[in-house]
Image 1: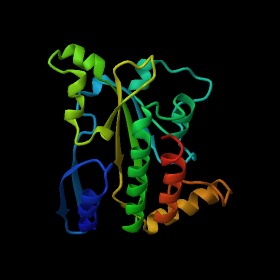
Image 2: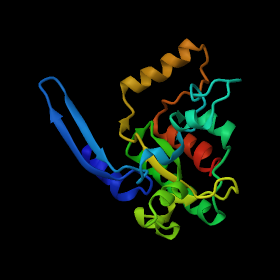
Image 3: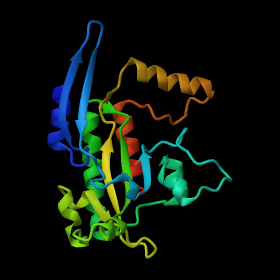
Length: 221
């Protein structure tokens, strides 16, 4: 399994950078530990929104209907797919990034499918680099890409009301194998809701990748 993780780091483009992978060996079980890069690169106090997107709609809403949430509260919450649909609908980024970003996400999803991994998410973080640079005068907007290994990892928003807001992207939680526990989870949720067609988060790797491409790469990008 660890070899698959290393291959993932070598060939996928949006998987958040991994520094170390090691195992803690115990008598009854082993625990895999992964040390990863901080996707934001700046303090979390400058985070505006955080979304965890899987391409599923079942149990993928954090904000309650008919309840208003102010911007300060939203900064503290990790929002999900339906919240993104209601608040954003799609990424508001320059056109020249879209096709490159879509291609990267499709390649990543297909790679995870081949090595039988699922349950990953696209982490979308909207960061206020304008305020950060104001508090740190040595930081210029032109320098922001230098904090990342690719310009696709930190993309400027084009909304007029979002001056200085950049979107940071990373695929996270990609270490989950399709195993008996996940199979049971999928069918249990369908039984509880008496809905055999229920689009649960847990899907086999091929179906998970297909949904991720259809609902994430081809819709919100």
